[in-house]
Amino acid sequence: MGILLKPLSLLFGVLGGVIASALFKRIWKMATGDDDAPHADDMDRTWREVLVAATVHGAVFGLVKAAVDRAGKQGVRRVTGTAGHPRAAARHDRSARRSAAPVR
Image (cartoon, rainbow, N blue to C red; front, side, top):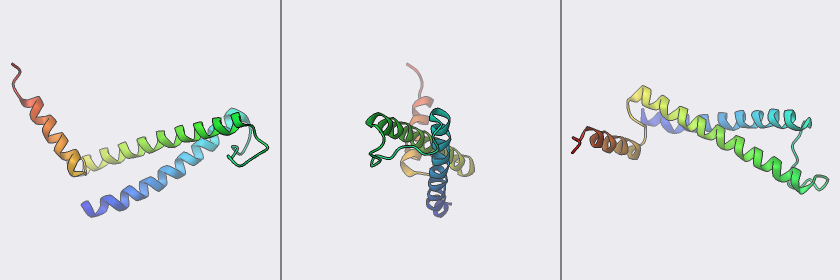
């Protein structure tokens, strides 16, 4: 199962990027009515427009990345019974032992 984790992670990362890009374009169009967000090198746009676009772009990509990563880890856990990463499995084991300890 470990052999599949890297390619699946890469696939979901690319898919997340495509989803984030489409979502950002839709949000930008709804918010401004413009089809395209300003780019940093677009000298016909104001600083404010460029920085707002960059902020929204970063927030959307961060949100989608976190959602895709989290869903991927949950899927791996569901299929394999582990978190899919040795350190995550060790953290899970330590927290399970702590919660099983008697309360004094």
